[in-house]
Image (cartoon, rainbow, N blue to C red; front, side, top):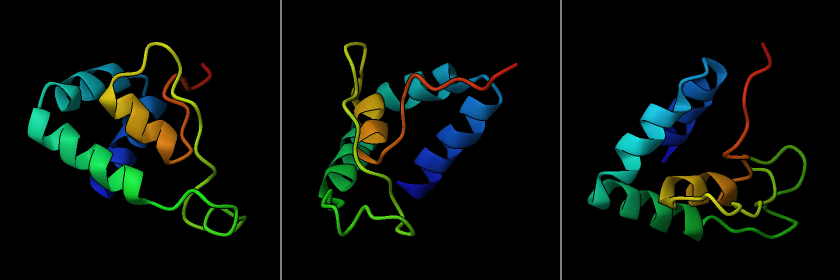
Length: 84
């Protein structure tokens, strides 16, 4: 989970997250495991408080594939883009 999610952080910052998302979504075993681990991270106010590892979960939105859903569960906006 950490490698994939932080890989997305870097790819999104460089403006090239779509390729990574497509590759992960295209690997059923990988994206199934990622989503299962992401869903297991507690999403309570105590677990997602300031200074904790994750921000509160977000709604993934209409376009969400399974990788986007995992990102949203962990507090990342799958539609985030770096400013030029």
